[in-house]
Length: 163
Image 1 (cartoon, helix red, strand yellow):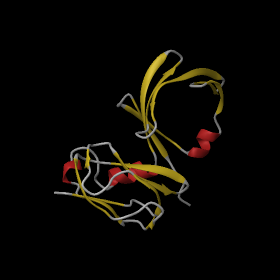
Image 2: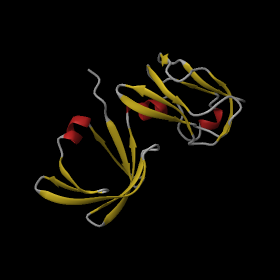
Image 3: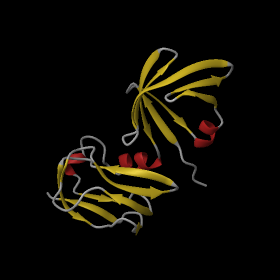
Image 4: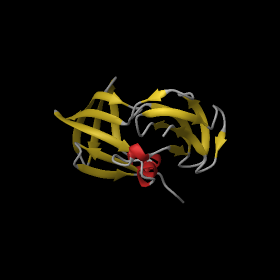
């Protein structure tokens, strides 16, 4: 069985992995709109979310008064990196393919639209998670091969960029 695994990069130099079951088992209580109290190994932690960019999975948090920048990566994000969409190879990307089978929940771009790196292109629901597919590069959309509500297979063409 394939269990989802989250990777967290903290302050761009420290990373760790977390299974969803382990995250759900944490002893924490929400104490305010953006604040939490966590008890781990009998040690208390006061956590505040200072800034959140959920679409990009970037957060700035404060733990017991110290600030941290955290970037989360779920299975889809990790697959995208494995497919070569990471920095440095992005400008050579001319097509976006489905990293896994799923349902297209929303399409945010149309043929002829100019997009910038990081702009949301579409939302793919896969494995009961909504995954925002972001543009890996600046460019112009040449073709959209899917519509909202469509189901796609792994490696199905989603978006084609002008070259």
